[in-house]
Image (cartoon, rainbow, N blue to C red; front, side, top):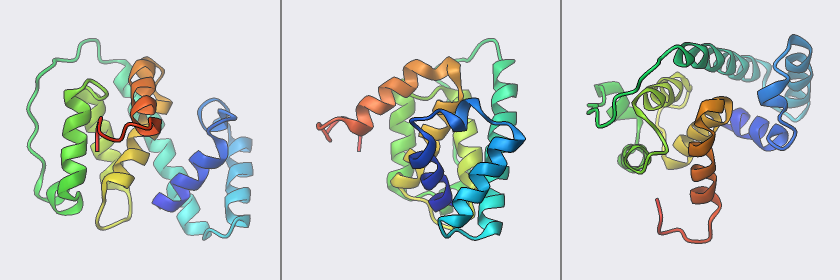
Length: 159
């Protein structure tokens, strides 16, 4: 599924189709294009369901009025097994520097656990974090910060 997510993001990021044109026809067009690119129908359907669920979660997040800073989160056994140590540290660092707040961390973890990959590394976390922030207009400053981190020449900022 992560391959389909990455393909969709690479293909549609500049056009904002993933963010703004989330109508049935746009979804059908994207689905057809991704299948024509060689992805299996089942994997594409699962990925589109992943996106729909993300959109639902973000609608719920909009209703949260206040987010408490400095919360502490212990990963579940499943999260610890599926996320590499580097991926866990990366998530923690994004929260420490203010890219993710506690609520968005939970959305990211939910979407990571919804992926069909058994083991998730930093690259997978980056894709999911970027997708989550991309879809959440209230997190545009965090998205910009993440873009700066991901696309900067200085790899020492966050790794």
